[in-house]
Image 1 (cartoon, rainbow, N blue to C red):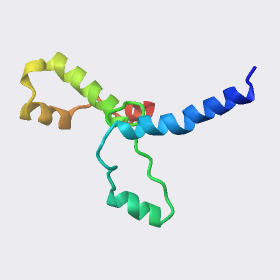
Image 2 (cartoon, rainbow, N blue to C red):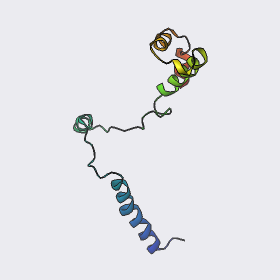
Image 3 (cartoon, helix red, strand yellow):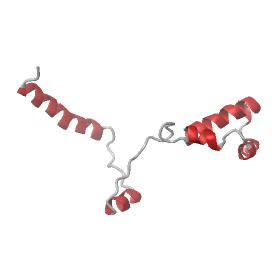
Image 4 (cartoon, one colour):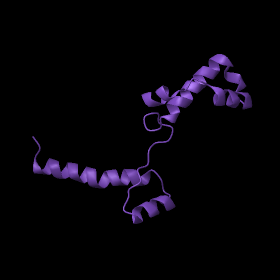
Amino acid sequence: GLTINKIRTLHYYHSSLLKKLSSSSSNKPAKVYAADQIALELEHVVVRLPPYHCIFNPIENIWGLCKEYYNKLIGEESYGREVLSHVAKSDTVTTEVWKSF
């Protein structure tokens, strides 16, 4: 079982070492965003999500579907303006597809 000493040791590791690890990942001071300051003044919390993560940003899944479709249609080498015009005209991404994410 956990003794008092083990609990204190775990508490020490959790409280001091994790803080050191998180702060030592960068020697630069943390960025302060204007949006965060405004939200804080209005008593809101801004949650930072990982960029390009398909669970939190469904557009990543949609973009993946579009790229797969156009790779089959045009080929991977020819990304450019013609692909953008195809994306705008595409029926691949329907309302039902968006709802599935």
